[in-house]
Image (tube, rainbow, N blue to C red):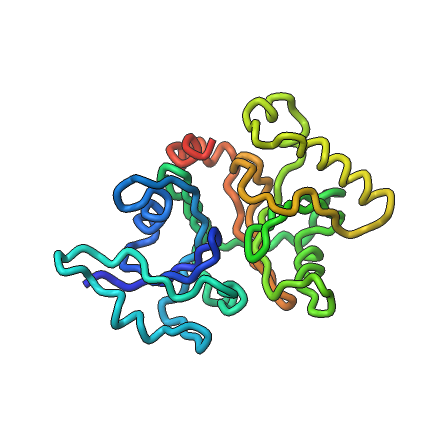
Length: 253
């Protein structure tokens, strides 16, 4: 019998039970069962023993079962609202990135860098909110700032990636390769100038942006944290992607 697995989807935020293994689940999210849909997917595999009173976990054993023809149950949604805040960080397994045509890349959790040397940072907040943020704070300090319960703008947990500003605003080829960027390169530079001028910790570049940027704009990886803890999932170097994950990298570009 196929193992029942739990996945935390980041776009859109949801908790899903499935009989599909991680790579097949990613392809299902991206292209659907009949290849009639298309969309990138980002999700974590969750400890299958995870339990929570916030979700109705009892229905998993009852409803996440094979179909009468023997095919596996692809998805059983257990939650679509306030999901991330109710998943403990210790329950998170690998992070999976799936391109629009179903190529899947698995990222393992790595050691959080002890220091960051950038003067400016560009963060792609993915869940539970998804603006594009310019900041003078490194990822650790940024997580503390965003999840500070004393702030009226806080969230319980935050999942984000650090983008490389130079990859977006440092080359004319960027605009040609990603026409959806519109005027964002100049807006990013403007926000960095304002951060330096007024000493603010963060500045919103785009309030509603989600997945505008391609994966080649990722600087070092993905972060997920709360006020007490920050997890880091390193993104492979370009050389590693071209050598070991060529199909995914070609699709991602």
